[in-house]
Amino acid sequence: MELDIQCEEMSPSRWAELLTTMKSCKTIRLDDCNLSSSNCEDLSSIINTNPSLTELKLNNNELGDAGVEYLCKGLLMPSCSLQKLWLQNCNLTSASCETLRSVLSAQPSLTELHVGDNRLGTAGVKVLCQGMMNPSCKLQKLQLEYCELTADIVEALNAALQSKPTLKELSLSNNTLGDTAVKQLCRGLVEASCNLELLHLENCGITSDSCRDISTVLSNKSSLMDLSVGDNKIGDSGLALLCQGLMHPNCKIQKLWLWDCDLTSASCKDLSRLISTKETLKEISLIDNNLRDSGMEMLCQALKDPKSKLQELWVRECGLTTACCKVVSSALSTNKHLKVLHMGENKLGDAGVELLCEGLLHPNCNIQSLWLGNCDLTAACCATLATVMTTKQCLTELDLSYNPLEDEGIRKICEALRNPSCNVQQLILYDILWSAEVDDELRALEDSKPEVKIIS
Amino acid sequence: MAGWVLCVTLVLAALAGVEGESRYEKFLRQHVDYPRTSTLAAHRYCETMLARRQVTAQGRPCKPSNTFVHAPAQDLVAACSREPDASGFQSTPTAMGITACRLRGGDTRPPCAYRARQVQHHVRVACRDGLPVHLAGTYAPPQ
Image (cartoon, rainbow over all chains, first blue to last red; front, side, top):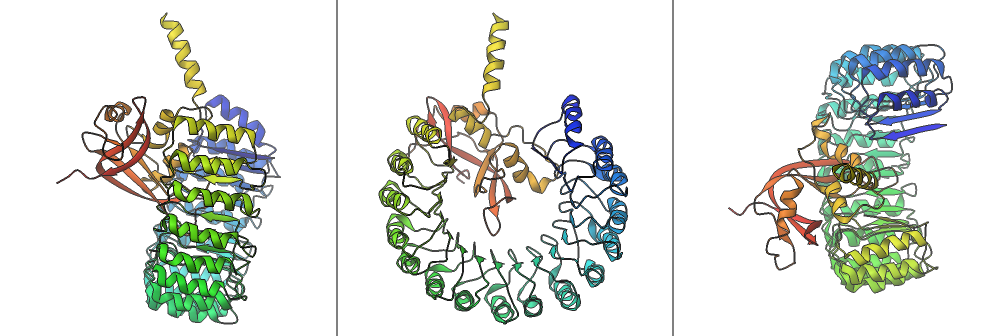
């Protein structure tokens, strides 16, 4: 039994009604429901009396330290077998950390703790780390984004990591850690016996200075599958250093997030080598890096390599134009593995999309999800897009948001959607202006083909 | 008579959910927040508002950008009686407080994270039957 409610203000009668339901739920999600510490008293007894409850998500409610105090009373009971606890943006401070520490030390069932977007601070999280040191703690996932942490936290974190071979996922994004701290963290990660699978360090004040140490983590931890250093100014020199670790035979990276990293086309030589040789690499995000057409062309050469197993390529807002579309098309007609191609916010134009469609139509191409939002497209390219939609059975998702397609263009897309050989299930059309008649046509289409979702 | 009007208003209000809302109502839902909602964490205005207004949700890709206007609806309706520009859009006569939400992150899957930018801008809208139905963009007041 699952309870999943978002953005709903709870009246007392509604709350009482829900409490009865909650007694037998396995998972409870009450996101942004205007809950407060008084609701936590009730939740505490639910936690206490519902032995099947494994997941509790209370993000975006002003529970406060007092609320957490109540919750933890229930959480500390031996009957509690909660596995996943989410308390993001709940107005918690370091004062909550003492209670959370006792939960960490006492509840071996707790495997996930998400407390981002709370002003816990370094002092507070140091206390959490102490809880993690307890051998009873079997934490696997720890999320501490936006917790106002500073460089000083790393010593305590490293100590906790040393003691926690169960830890698989660590997120410290959006904390001003800086290079010195990140380097120290990397050394700690290499020494720790945990088999870390996910490491997120977005917007942590990292520069190329840290990249050698991050590289060392990559070449030492074969377990690491998911790395994100997005929103850090690592630059081309930093990327070159990262690639040393990424290319190492020990590295089994699957998902690599390098969005907004100040990369240019100069990085694309290394990135190409990575894409064409690292067969474990499935997803790469390069959003908001000025790769330009020359950079994209290099990436496309890599995609043509049969060793490339990349499934998802995110190159939104990369300074691409019509000029790169021919090479992209050529890659699409050779590459069979790519499933998701995200090229929004690039000035591809109608001519560019016409070229892309040639590649998309090739029998080798298995693209399932295609994103062309805000690409300067008009009605002129919609006939060809319609052909792709009715020819490529593999295409299930198409984004054309923010393009001035006008009624003429939308009508052509609708016609394609109505075609029984079109398998598009999700059509994304954010912020496009169309007439009331076309609006009705879109609604009628959704009614007649219930498997199709038009998102706007 | 007043009772009947009230009744009709309530019925209409009940019907105006996301299902079956008019384009003007959708415009208000996605773009008008007046007075500006004060959110639990100030840096999460976009995340909170976009979720509450059902622009972002589980199963929906994150909307890459969205603007909220902090002015009464009638100020935007008033723009519709102004002279349209070359593209057929109409601008508000005065600049108004807006929050421009821009998606940040490596992909467009929820949870959606945004960067908020608060400025005083003129708002450009497309109007149909005297009501705004589309937010075409905003621009800084000419110096």
